[in-house]
Image 1: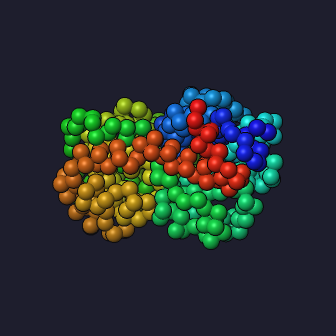
Image 2 (image 1 turned 180 degrees about the horizontal axis):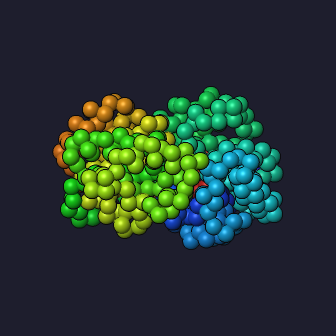
Image 3 (image 1 turned 45 degrees about the vertical axis):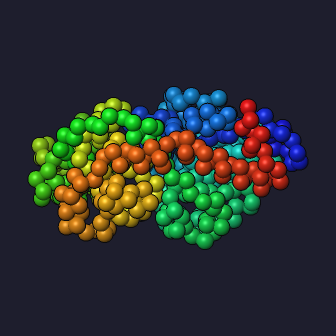
Length: 399
Ligand code: UDP
């Protein structure tokens, strides 16, 4: 096993197996926080000489050194189905990851992004298998019995996507944490050199339509201030009004939409445009006066926050979760006390005082894929150092 021996062996290439899970292709077809981050990370790692074996679904188009998959396409539509229907999907995907690892000896580290099962199964493979770094993309108050009782057996390490997120982690999870790495977006690359985009006067919320993201709050504020608000993002697995019309009420996000958001949509002042992609998404955000985050949870990483800043649009929201780490209130956005709708409405009105160029500068400095890859390489190095008692990372990257 050339990549894993203890001792003084020099690595020629660092081969990392990147497990993306079976839910969406990489890059994702529209919505997809985790998959967007992986799509930003992998090219930046490969530019640094890392070989990446991407375990995803077959229609992922991200360039990698090798692709492995079980499912032809993303299984996201099943994600909110009952557990007894969906568990086989997650297990089939992971089973493929395990057989891949058992069948080869070049992978020196597994970087895993599959919720709950990834760290359990891959962390338990034993000393013959590569060490695992599991990135925690989730609210860590989920799965208390799992996160509260993890042992890790020395082979498993985790990282958060913000400092705030890790402060909510149970002690057992914190004990195997190697810190946090903020998310990144390709839009941040030279964001400060892009010409300023003319603002069109609307507000935007970019994200899943779910109580966590607070679209109902944003809609109420828009009506109150007489402002135009565009809501972009899927409702559960439904991406367009036509698709959503066919949905029954079993999905909790569909119920939230029907009960709390739809009554506030008038198609004029407050609109839902479904999931927006690519340039359409970027233009929608870049021309907005502000992106709103009236979040009702501890937002763990906030890809859409980094994207908004990179596109020169101030972030206005509740100061909880990762937001205070990503946004400096008064300079790149305005953050107010969580749940204070009056204060949020006042902040929306004051957002024009925030300089879009300052937002772009901040994104170019802090949220580029190269910066994220650099931090992950440091974590990989720490884990491999611990494994091998040598410093393989430097030689791995001298290619
Ligand atoms: N997104 C998109 N189109 C939409 C709504 C969302 O491309 O209509 C993307 C958005 O740009 C971001 C991701 O989906 O990259 C959402 O990730 P985030 O971390 O903000 O939220 P979460 O992972 O909690 O859903």
